Image (cartoon, rainbow, N blue to C red; front, side, top):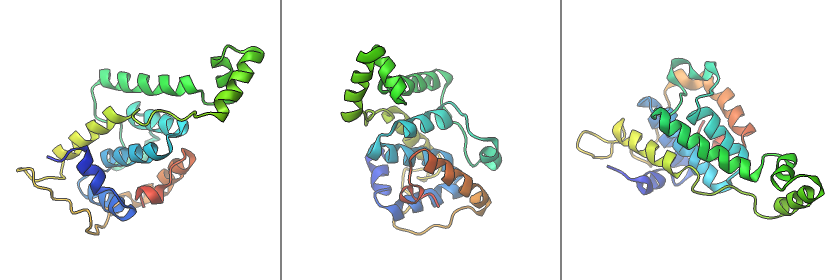
Length: 194
């Protein structure tokens, strides 16, 4: 079975990421593959809205209904205690940094001291931890290993440098999903989701 480094190698270029996405649609594991790609995208930028999007949509399951139709997107298939744990960890990290200037000022005690503290924080490094979704991504690798990227003997079926056509049934869902990705600070083309 492949480990996380193998999957990172499988998705090391934009073309490989697109092949990864397209192959996963044929195996109906695109929702899991998308989470893997989103976490990789998050690792580059570490934006709060990216973390919020991953948490809200894929961990908590707040995906618009029309994007859930025909199984295009779904909440990660994890136990409820892991859902709570992953969600709490991400929300705690987001809250500690603060989504808005007002949040940052409040986190620094409010008032004039809070404003100055928020200004210092805003000029410093206010990115989230790069390893915030490590456990989530490890779980996606387990699911991908279990569901179609390898044959029964552990041999890789997916060929990273091969061109795959995506499952056509999901084509109508992509424009709305790509717009949501853009609003969350992701570049869908760089992620290979097209």
